[in-house]
Amino acid sequence: MASMGDTADTAAADTAGAAEKKQDRKAAKLAKQIGAFAKQHGGVEGQLAHIGQAGTRIVLVGTDGGWGDLVAPTFAVARLAAEKAALTLHDEFDGEFAARVRTGPYEWTRMAGIQIGGPANPAA
Image 1: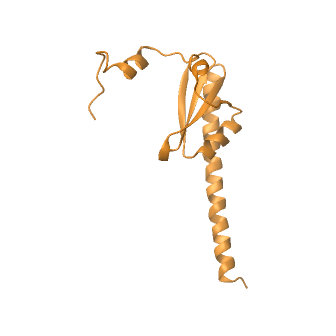
Image 2: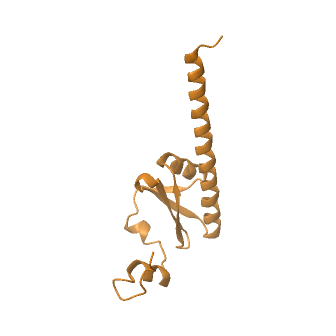
Image 3: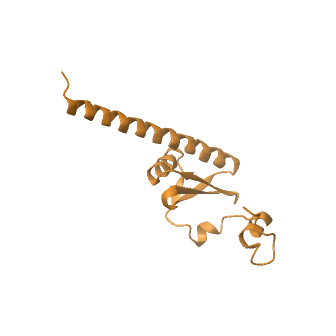
């Protein structure tokens, strides 16, 4: 007969296993999105950036200069997604890596629009 301690240990193991499976599913979903981005942009490299309690941002830069990002709930999930997608990661978003990003009019008006007389952000 199982003791109460054994039951608690089993429940904790089941909970940990369920959490691990959930993280693995999230990482697999992110890896699939990274793969789709890579296919659309002729390849991709990335960088992981902590964004506080919101998780970790996976910044993607395509071979063609296209860019985007995804958000993982934790750094561990972001790293696992990168591994599953065989994403080459940079330690920093340094000048050489950032120089690959191609921006257009939309980004320029959104990044500096208010400061240089561009369109204002819509009211919340």
